[in-house]
Amino acid sequence: MSDALVQARGLRKSFGEVEAVRGIDVDVARGEVFGFLGPNGAGKSSTMRMIACVSPRSGGTLSVLGMDPGPDGPRIRARIGVVPQLDNLDAELSVRENLEIYGRYFGLPRRHVRAKADELLEFARLTERAGDRVEELSGGMKRRLTIARSLVNDPELLLLDEPTTGLDPQARHLLWDRLYRLKREGVTQIVTTHYMDEAEQLCDRLVVMDGGVVAAEGSPAELIGRYSTREVLELRFLPERRPSAGELGRHADRVEELPDRFLLYTADGERTLGDVAAAGFVPLSSLVRRSSLEDVFLRLTGRTLVD
Amino acid sequence: MSVPTRAVAPPAPTIWRLLPAGSYAGRARMMMLRSLTASRHTWLAFVSGFFEPVFYLLAMGTGLGSLVGDLPGPDGQPISYAAFIAPGLLAASAMNGAVFDSTYNVFFKLHYARLYDSMLATPLGPVDVALGEIGWALLRGGLYSAAFLSVMAGFGLIDSPWALLALPAALVIAFAFAAIGMAATSFMRSWQDFDLVTLAVLPMFLFATTFYPLSVYPRWLQLVVECLPLYHAVELMRRLTTGAVGLGLLPHLAYFVVMIAVGVAVAARRLGTLLLR
Ligand SMILES: Nc1ncnc2c1ncn2[C@@H]1O[C@H](COP(=O)(O)OP(=O)(O)OP(=O)(O)O)[C@@H](O)[C@H]1O
Ligand SMILES: [Mg+2]
Image (cartoon, rainbow over all chains, first blue to last red; front, side, top):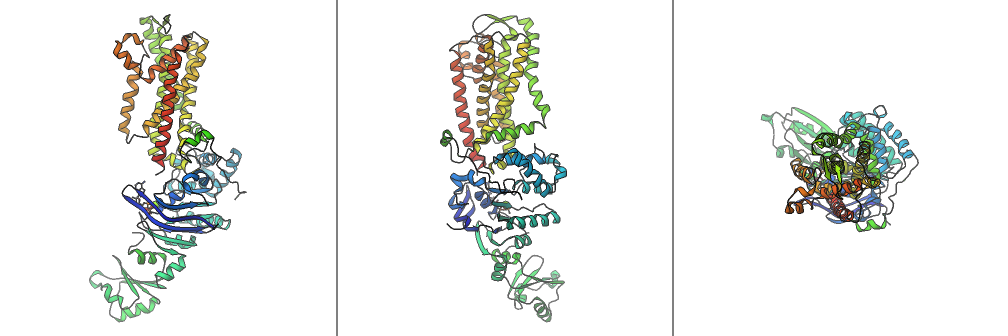
């Protein structure tokens, strides 16, 4: 038996005419944190929902925890935790009841869910708000509660669809820390995100999705090594002094032209900046930085991820 | 983290193998627990449901009844107007409660609160959801019916110990309307469609022999009324509370058994296709 917790081959999903996922192969090993990175409409959520056994696949094969989501849906769902892209907390229940009742859907005994709720309220830093109605919480608090709820059954596999959207920086870092601790306890995680830093922080391995297909796969460092240079020089010009991409391209491995700036891919950004200046181009501002997954994405799809 | 306790879905009971795989985890009662917990926050709405039929009984039974006098009961014996309409009101309130819970409430949870989405991410399946919602509507309806029966007894409107069976009968009636209501709701696309519900329920309430006997209609209209579910509900109730019990009850019961079977089957299937996209 392979150690893949999730294995997809030629996995497809269509909604009528719309082909959301167009044949992807994915292997997620036990214990790893796996990422789906991609722009709006790439098919990330559709894939996540198929893995979560709440959306039947339109084609291909899929196995989750060694079982088929078709017939074994309930047995798989009993062992996974799900954070959907949009919070779907129970508005008629209090914060604490949301955790306890959800635990009861898993068949967990009353005493157990009560203790578990205490622990998760602490984790979500909502202990003081335990008796409040969900509607009274802020957006970020709701998100934290949804994430806490997904842990009520001590899942082996955690599916997080844009978990940190709507969280403030502090809550985000707290969550990253908590996810890291879960990883060390052996909880496998699948994360989708638009945030590059999040993907680089969290993911052992990730795929870049675009238009329902996998554009590239690897660890963040591998992807950057494969698809980008070590450094990036960002240049902004006054509109009337703006050179063409071709003119700048002579000084770098590759140039991307964005509406407001140029990105010059090069091993040594400072040197390239010197070369550009020597050629008579005077930028309004310049910035040298390390390559990131953002650059990988731009390279692969020709588009920026967050626009 | 605490000790790993893994939740394992129990194998489904044999009879449910007939349903699509994975659609039933045998935990509908957890959904009822959820509704019970939620109702503690909305107890006022909960309590108000009891008063509606009581108000009708007071206004029509005692008020109008003093003008109308006695009417022939199911076995031909004359009974007071209040005793005539009370079982009708009992049947109608079982219908109204079940229809409200299974149409407006379910539609809201389905399309706005996304409540069922969150449930289906757990081992619960669409059949748990359907049965849980119907079960809650029944529990609530059962409490209202019991309360109304006590009021009837208090007013001296009950002639027979058979009336005790009116309670389970109310549950059967509510189950049937809830099942059909839920099935219908799964086809609705907007709030406008609920005008159709009103259009079905209100005339039934007024014309399906709740307030006067079938004999007031010409024969062809009698045949139409005899097809309506509320007519069978009212007949069932009236026979039980007046003690006119016999084999004649069975066709009425059979009517509701069919409604239940069709309603549950359609609702569970449609909920599955609506939610598991
Ligand atoms: N329930 C649905 N019915 C019809 N089309 C859908 C449905 N869900 C998704 N789609 C379509 O499938 C495609 C992929 O959507 P999906 O939600 O998987 O993208 P995503 O990568 O999660 O995007 P985002 O970053 O915006 O969350 C889109 O074109 C979307 O319109
Ligand atoms: Mg998405």
